[in-house]
Structure formats: structure tokens, C-alpha cells
Length: 302
Image (cartoon, rainbow, N blue to C red; front, side, top):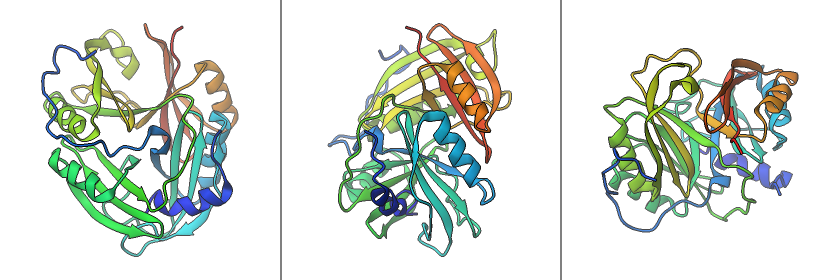
């Protein structure tokens, strides 16, 4: 799917460039070779909304995070016939690719959570396969590059994309978390394989993290944080017995002030689903934007 790729001409035309491993992680990386990551400022969360909510969603998200949106256009962004209105949103705290399909969404598109820019598509697909991923949609051409969809043990799906001509975007002010919920049966397996692909590292493996941050105060769970050239990933290892809306959010955005961000979000049409929860490291809340996109926001205690 040229999910992000087919948005790139519109983005270029709009000139929207913004200015310790824990004890349980013993597995070594499985694959060698150079990293295929380009940088987290090129990685986007994929958001699917309906045609009648895309205007409200884009306006609310842009207002909340001080972002800019590309011009909207209608594309065929899959390797099979389809049509979607598409926009790209840049903010200082993370990027979005937004899709409002006007036709049914071909399988398996719509299940991928992110698009990762890679240095070379063939090398990236080969590295993903070597690291244990499945290729759900083989590499295909779009007007200015290539795209593929891969899936990891534990069910995490993502897009890889490649530019014929490399883009140049400024670094993010803060790098968002790709928030991944896994079972205890899949977590270590996923982490081992994803680290092999991403050439990343474990920066936190906390066996008794505060359950209040996933709606379960008074309990604990295992939390792992990874960092790589693709950005940050926060992994929540649970038994799956989660109160709504936890587990529905795919991205967590680091902001300067949670309360101020909530105020801007609500003023622009979003809803506060879970009020701020105070943890040792900062505060966290869950917001639902128009179009039913659910996101976590957090600040960091100074």
C-alpha cells in the first residue's frame, strides 16, 4: 500500500517540514548487518477515519499538537483497486498518515499501526524475514518509491516504505512511543526478533510497573521500553484483562504539560477518556479525537 508513500507528493508540495536492560531480557539479537532505519521523524502512525469525520479529526489533532496538515487528495494507495482521501500531519511530537477510504479497504490494510521509512526496501524486507517477521504484502511500487506490510510475532503489523528521492525533515521535539500490548507468552519472543531487525536496545525492563498507567491502579505489570533508529516502543505485558480504552491506543505522545494539552484537545472537539494519572515519572492520560482515534499523552517529571 502506498499508504504514506502516495501522500508524499502532496506533502512536498505543501512544504510542511517542521522546522538499562532489565534482568528478564537475556536474548541476544538474531541478525547482523546495517540498520535500515532512517529516523523517527519519518515514521508515522496510520489513522483510519470515515469520510464524514476526517475534517474534524485533522482540525482537532492539528490544534492539539500545534501541527500542520498536507493538502488532501484522493489516491489509490493499495496494490489492488481502492480509493481513499489521504492527508499527512506533521507535529513536533509525532507524525500521522490519515486515510478516509471511499471504497472498502482491501485486506490486510487498516491493521498496520505505523509506517517506517527504510534505507532500501529489498534490504529491509530481507532483514525483517531474517529477524522472524512475516511479509503480509510483498514490496510493490508506488509513484515515488516502494511499500510493504510486515507482521511480527505477537500480532504487531507495520508498513515499510522507501523513497526514490530521500526526504529531509527536521528532528522531532519529542519522539512518541509506539504502544504495544502483548501477552507474557509472546513478549520476549517479539522483543528478541524486533531488536534484531531494528538494531535497537532495551532501555527499561520493569517487572512491577505501576498498573495505574493502564487503568489498573493497585496492580503491577511488566513494562519494557525499546529505542532504535525507528524511535521508541513501550511494551505492556498483561493478561489482556484491560479496562477500556487501554489497549486501543497505538501511540503515546510526550508533551510539555498534560493538563494544557487536554485543554487544547477538548476545546478542539476531542474527549478525555481517562483523566491524568500521576506516576513516579510523570502524568499520563487518554484522549479520543473525532473519528475515534485514541491516543495517550504524557509528560515527564522534571
